[in-house]
Amino acid sequence: MSGEDRLAEEIAALAQELDDDKLLRILGLIDRLPERGKLDRLVAPHRKRLARLRPARPLTLRRLLTVPFEAALVSPERWRPGDYRIPRSHLEAVQNTALEGISGEERRDLEAALKGHDFSEGEHVLELGRRLWPRGAEVLAEAAESCRVDAGLRASMRLAGHLLFLGDRLPPFLWRLPPKPVRGLDPELEQELEALYLAAATRGREALMTLLDLLVERCDSPMLLVAPLLAVELPLPRRERATCAAVIVDRSLEELHRRTRALAGGTRPGIDEIAELALSVAAQLASLSQAPADLPFDRHLPRRLRRASAELVEKAVTEGLEELFAEACATRDGDHFAVLEAQARNIARIRTLAPQLGVASKVNYALRRAEQRACGCFEAAAREMAAGDPGILMDRLRIFELLFGSPKAVALWRKWGARLMAA
Image (cartoon, rainbow, N blue to C red; front, side):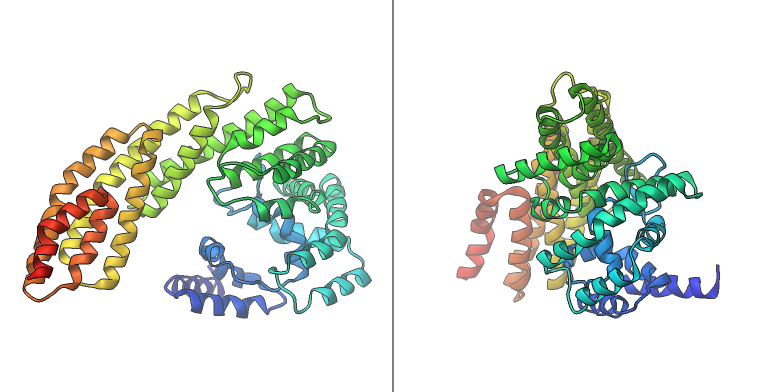
């Protein structure tokens, strides 16, 4: 490893400790550079955090080009040959190839039109994208057939080209898609989805599968997307469409199973990660329970995923409750109570999903066992309140309410809190 690489890694590690405001300031400085180069490593570990913060990113030609296929980008560690995804390690080569097909005059015109604008201006993004994306799709399709690069990069060029071809329709659809878990699509979105399928199918089977894979990743409810695919009139027979959908469903289930195993084998994953995974698993299983009998996906995969996620959830809830009340009984720090409350909220989320994962009885048993300790924790807080430290009482009561419900929290308050407040 070179000295420059080592320095970049050290800076990236320090950036992990920054608060949101400082992270956004650093990102703003990097965004002003014409070429980010190795500085892009500083951004990579924070992509999930930045997705939550949604900073207004300045428009550049490369970013504009990437809009239609950005949702298909994955880290090199997550990518496997044959996936309908594009590893970020291929991104620069894909961008360079596509932009080589843009004339110098058109490029200067686009860059001038981009200057001073950011991604919050959706209509401006689409207006300029319609000038760039069709040509980029053509160039990448030609390059994938003729260039002498490895098969993986050629595949990335093809996939990016398919999504650029859909650029007029795909970004607006994704922008309007509800957050996970998507329960349904309004009639206007359903019409847009059918138009997307038709446009992709005219380009071929690979384009249709690339689109479907991207949408399933964003939606977590496969049948919400597969049912219209099987019902709409397309230039592909229904049986072929069902086979395409089954391949994507199997891949989605296998990816969830891989994530489950990775969390189970990792070093104490956060309860928030497990709650997020449980939500995705529950949504997928509920959706696939409505799958038609002739959808030829692997019916063993949902059962295997349910077992793996149930084991992970049971262990996470049991250990999480033990840790939660050990810290709640010991801490006097109000800021730390906010962290503990977030942990309790995630355990409560998992409890609501437990029946769909087939682990409701085990989660309820863990909560019943924890309830006695929680009552003792609250009673200790009540005694400290009587000694002149009232602040911690309500913090602990809030955690108790999240985990065991309002009726039990009210009963506990009546037994201890109200009596002491009156005194």
